[in-house]
Amino acid sequence: MTTGASPFLQLLKLAKAPGRRAELMSKLIDVYVADKTRFNAKARAELDAVLTALIEIAPDDARRTAAARLAPVDDAPPALMRRLAGDAMEIAAPVLSHSRAIDRETLYRLAREGGDARRLLIARRSDCGPTLGALLAEHGNEATLIALAENLRARLDGKAMDALTEAARRRPALHTPMAARPDLPPLTLTRLYFCVAPPLRRDILMRAEIIEPALAAGAASANRESVLTDAGDRLDGARRRVRKALRAGSAPATLLCDLLRAGPASAAGRAGVSGAFLIAFAQYAGVEIDAARAMLGDQRCEALAVAARANDAPRPLFARLMFGVGRLDEDDAQTARMLDLYMKIPRHGAERLMRFWRVRGRAASPGTASPDEARRESPLDLEAPRLRAAG
Image (cartoon, rainbow, N blue to C red; front, side, top):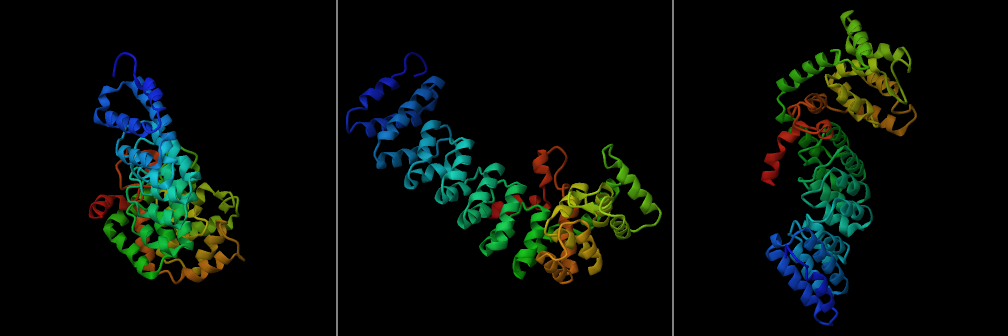
């Protein structure tokens, strides 16, 4: 079948005989699965066209058999698999669950428009990647979100994590599967800590025990040194300003307050924090620059509360920081909640959460991950292989 004229287009004419179409389709699939190496690219494309035409006129049981037979075949005819993925659920199920022959665009479309039953099966796929995960997290119902959170082989990015965490605030059924994921970045862990029940909070803190206190302290010292080291970027001026203030004897907390007193233009505002305030906060928290940005960018100020509480900041200082970075208004209900909750955060709990933030980005060696993946690296990634093997 690798040379000469392909017989498949002629076979389509034979399929016009009623009662022979399902048989013909089954035999063609048998021939293909038995020895795919006999088919060159042209023959595969013709076979795909023939099978796709046959599937349109095949009865349900024949389509069901074809889907089950081809779902495990990684290089099954792509157009046919797209057609089967959109078929009735009892036919499409094995294809949606297992087929590697479905292209990414088809999975994205089905995740957006395919309905809850299809999304649920897609959320359980072992090859669920960041873009697909984000679409499922955005469009899925509770069952889909739980399946996605429980799928430890799914590679979820920050967008998917954020969507799942926000959903967990309204859907308690998500708390356990989300808290059990081994790949949660520090911001997600911090947000979960504030929305789950006390037993899961204890579980989250226990997971921090995989990071030795000495390792976290060493990372904090290294972070404080690195954030003050000129890097040839637009923050060098801010670094010099903070270095000068610290050498003059200002403590990081005092410097933060001084920057706040200087006014929004010098410290913070609705558009974000200034470079000097960002550097000073990184010093205060003992975290890298990107971690400081994430903490200050947290709209609910939960990460800010953890950093302040770990540093034993009094409630007025936390309130000043919270209002100063402009994330919450004084009459906002979330503001009242955070001010009430702040002193109830156990300091030892905040210190353990800060271990994740302080070793953030140091779990992987340089060059081992893409920039997007490196930004969401967590120390818990070190634990992932063991957890997945145990599961």
